[in-house]
Image 1: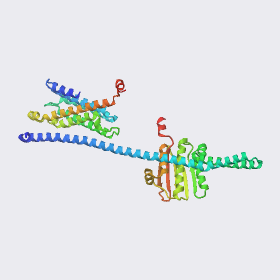
Image 2: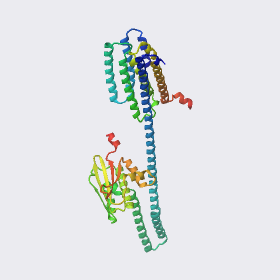
Image 3: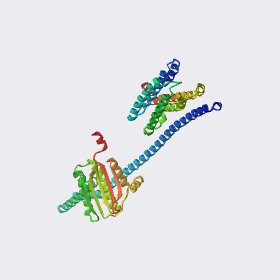
Length: 280
Length: 183
């Protein structure tokens, strides 16, 4: 009411005063509300991201446990189905030797036992090699990868070659094992699913990163396929690759060559771990 | 401390040293607000900016106090103070908005203090600006705006104190006699 009682300039001033005050207040409260709601939105988004990451971790963990169980089952099957009968046969021969006193029969059965034991030793060696290739342990990643590719090439089904251009500074043993397992898994997948006629591996160093590239001319994956499979419950091998690379702080990229003829997989691993760099 | 500045302003306004005392109250208020924001803001460059702008403001206030003619209050320095504190406050909120470690802004007592600054300063801004232009009768008539925002500021400060006290209680580990009593 007092606004109506004043004169014109006074009315203008009081109107400006009231409008200005209300305007400033609205502006301030509006900005505060915006900041509060924006922060809430950001938090909600972050929580969602965290939940997704946890789910991904869970999938990877389950995959690695399943893989470990599968590996154990395979070793158990190898030992039970192959080594077990061989040793049982050797035992039979030995029992027969105790009963049969004929010299020539005894010699023959000892010869048989030796043969069986040789076979068992070879079998155990094969199992052990499949668990941890001796070339990798003794001579490093380069020799182990070259050996693997030579074996594949030697089978005659596929043209396989590998070349290390710059591997003077070896990676740590744990990292070498992880890289080797990743390469094994990738090569395995290519052999099983791609129907490729050639597979070629090259190694390089870019900056502080160890780079491995695998080319093949069969059917392959691109990054989106890999990510999709990685998030799904299938594709155990790919999840194993992801978890191994995570441990090594590395990354993997699946793509089709620009010429659209080859599929290319690039693995990049820092030569030194980020934690080590921080310590230095 | 913020309340102390208000009490001081009321006391000194009766003493006759209008220019100096009004300016000193503006200075006190500005320094207290700016100091609080200086310690709440984490970015180094922003802290430097607060220091530089504060020095400039003090210099401006000094010049204004001894050169300008006061009708009622020091409108222009109050206007500048308001703008500066509002800028610092918005920067503080912007910083907190980008701080991912803060789950809820309103769980921090600093937030309530800054909100109190902002609402009080923005609410009183136009009244202080027009205080010298309006006739005395109108100033008296509209002075309730200042009173409302002063009350609001103090209510928000009380909330801040409450939040501070609650957060301290949460952080304090139980004393030995409390643990013994539990066992």
